[in-house]
Length: 156
Image (cartoon, rainbow, N blue to C red; front, side):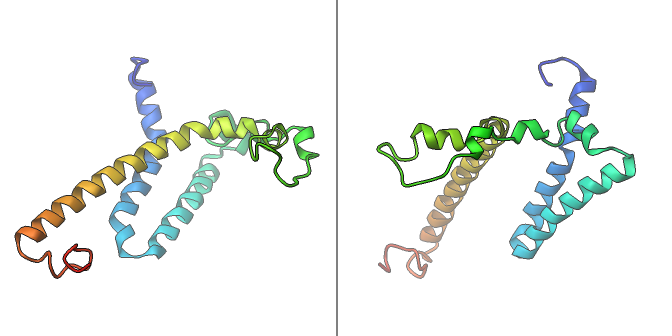
């Protein structure tokens, strides 16, 4: 959308992702206050999605055509994969052709971009969290509070 050069396309995609940005901001603000907020925000995103569809008169087929939901064909398994009976792993464990046939590859490929994006976000979060911990530990050590900290090497 950014490389298309179309402002309309950019606004359309921003509008499409605005609910997830709002939910993310809500999780950022309310998440530390308690785990019940996490469940509430996730449940509310589902309720608001179907409420929006109801209020705008959008059918599930229309939403699937606009790529808001996956189509049945995108997540269906082949008939030979359904007939597969799982047994003990063979010589190469989970990489055997029998196990690989059981995977719904269309669903795997459709979800791969989201998994990669979430992995990058998680890696960024971990690196920022580690930097914040190092800064906090250095500040505590400088102030002389490092000895009282339970994770301090002076205690262990």
